[in-house]
Amino acid sequence: MSPLPPSTTTFSAADHPWIDVRTGYQYDQVGLRTLFLNAHRIDDLALPHPPAASALLRIAVAVTARITGLDDPELTASQWNALRRSRLTEGHFDPDAVHAYFDQHFWGVLDPIRPWLQDPSLRDQCDHSTGINAFVPGRPAGNNLAWFSPHGHHTTEPVPTAEAVQILLIHHYYGRAGTGTPRTLNGATSGRQTSGPLRSSVSFHPLGRTLHETLLAGVPAFTGDDQPPDTDACPWEQDAPHDRQAPPHRFVTWPGRQLTGLSQHAILLVPGHDGTTVTDAYISWATQQPKPITTDPYLAYRIIPERKNAARRRTLHRADASRAWWRDLDTLLLAPDEYGTQRRPAIFDTLNDLPEPVRRNLRIRVHGFDQDTKSVDRQWYTAITPPLLNWTQEHDPVKAHRIAECCREAEQTAQRLKTVAKEAWNTAMRSRSRRTTPPPWVNKTLTRYWPKAETVFWKLLEEPDTPAPTAFADAAAAALRETTKAARTRHTSAARAVAHAVKTLYRRPAAPRKAT
Image (tube, rainbow, N blue to C red; front, side, top):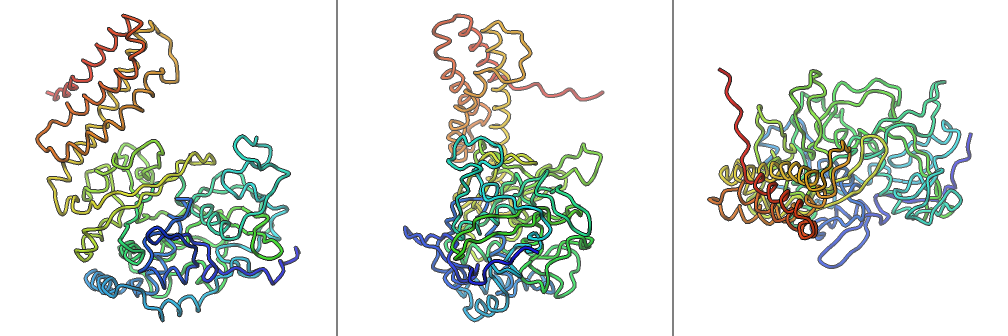
C-alpha cells in the first residue's frame, strides 16, 4: 500500500481562501464558508477559468438550497417561490445556518482518508500517477510538444493548492473521454473513461446585483418524479464514498446529485510537503456505468426529430468560441414549445417569479468551454448580457418574436454569404477544384460580417418596422466588398464575380412549392 501523505498537509475548501471574488474594484480570495457569510457584500465570482466558475456555481447553488430550505421536495411550487422570495428579502444568508452546514461536513482537500471531491483509493488502484502537467490545462504532457508553455516532461512545476482546487472542478465537470490512467478494481483493469457531464457545453447562469441574489436566483425548482425524503446527497455529504461498481440510481436526485454528483472522473491530488502546493495528481475513471439521462438547468438543448433513436434526439447546445452570445437570444427568450427544436435552460422557467427589483436587474452570465467530445480543448470564454428578462415571451411576446426573427435572419444571411463568397472566389479564380477547406474569401468575409451583424441586430430592436432581411444583407454585402477590395481593384473578373454575389445576397430564397 502506498504511504499516506503527511497529516500536516491541511487545506479546507470551506475555510482556506481559494475562490476569487470581486466587490467593486476590489478582488479577494475566500473559502466557501466566507463566500456565503459575505455573499450579500460580494458582487460576483472572479475565477480566472470560466469552466471552474461554472462548476463552482453549481456547487454553491446546491449549498444554497441546503442552507435556505429550498431543497425540500415536499414544497409546492407556490410555497417554494414564496420561500425563495422570503430569503431574497432577508438580504443575506443566515450565519447560523451557514456555520451549521459547514461544521456538519468535512472539507479537507488534502485529507488522506476522505479528501474533498477526490477518491483516495486511486493511490492503490493505479500503478502510476497521471502527472501534474496532464492535470493542469494548457501544459504539455507526455510526448506532446511544448509550443506555448515552458513546461515539459522533466519540468513538473507544482501548482498552488488554491489553483489546484479550481482545476479539480474543471476535470469533474468538463473532463475528457478516451484512454486515461488505468485503474484496477475488483480484479479488472481499465483505462477507458467517459467525458464529464458538461463537456463542450455553454452554461447560462442568472447574475444578480450581489452574489446572494445570484445564488438564490440560480436555484432550480424541483420538477422531477416523487423523490423520497433524505435520499439526495452531494459527494461531501455522503457517509462513505460511492461504490464505483454499483448500478446507477433509478433517477438523478435533486438538487445535490443533479448539480454535484454526476462526475465521470476519479481524481486524487498529491500535496507538497507543507500543503501549499500540489505536486502530482491521479486522474482515472469514476464509473463504468452508462451516463444517467438528466436535464441540466443551465444548459440549452436542441431537438433533432429526424433521429430514429429517441434517446439521441436531444443534444446540448455546444459551446463555440467564435459565436457571439447574442446569436442565442432567441433560444433564451422564447418559452418552451412542444413543436420547437430549441429548449431554453430550465432555470429560465423560474425567473419570472422573482421579486420585481431582482428580476428587472437580472443579467445572464455565459460560461462556455469550446471542446470536442473526446479530448481536444480549444478555448473557454465568458460574457455577461444586459438585463433581458423583460424581453422574454412571457413578458413581451412582440419583442421576443422580433428578437427571434432577427436572430434567424442573421444566421440565414450568414449561410447565403458563405455560399456566394465561395462561388465568387471560384468564378474569379476560375477554380473548379473540389477543395475540402473553404476558399480564403469565406472565413475572412464571415469574420467581418458578424460584428456588423451585431450592430444591425441591436439597431433593428429599436426599429421594429425596418425589414430585417435587407438590413442584414447590407451588412453581408459590406463585409464581402471589404474582403475583396484588393482583388476587385486588380482583376475585372473578381469585380464581376463580387457584383453578382452581392445581387444574390438581396434575393430571397424561393418558397418551396406546395404538393398538389
